[in-house]
Image 1 (spheres, one colour):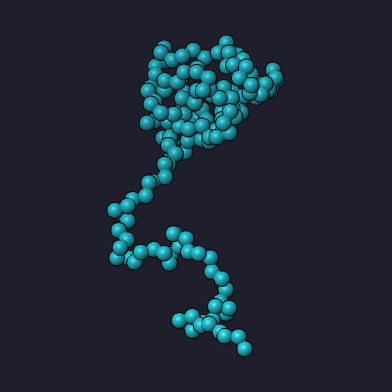
Image 2: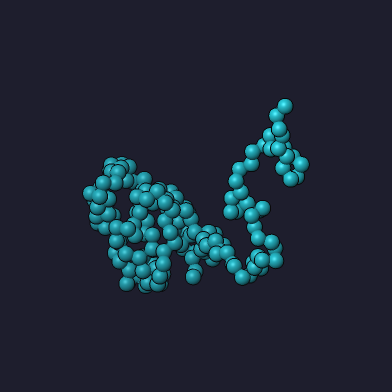
Length: 156
């Protein structure tokens, strides 16, 4: 007969299932409660909430087709009077589209570009420029029905 080894708890090793090693985050590895500082002593960073406009609507999600990431809410908004805003018209739109294509982004063709508005990430009304990285093509319907009305109702 084979000698059997018993553990101190009376269970033979062959009768137990193998257990994975305890990770540092496992509940069994936490220090006793009296050694854990109360939550106020180690606050967790709060999740950044999206800004809301005066109607309580959250900042709309717009995906930048260059990065495939949502465009962030712009910093340093400064209310800018109409006479002090950068110009925007068909010439500036054409310049953006030309630079877009030159940088290797998709050319949607004359008909395809008609489906897009060129959105100022930081609106001209809030000090935005016509800099390439402040502009992004977005679906015209989404721009007119969601994004522009959100900014129209924005009050910092």
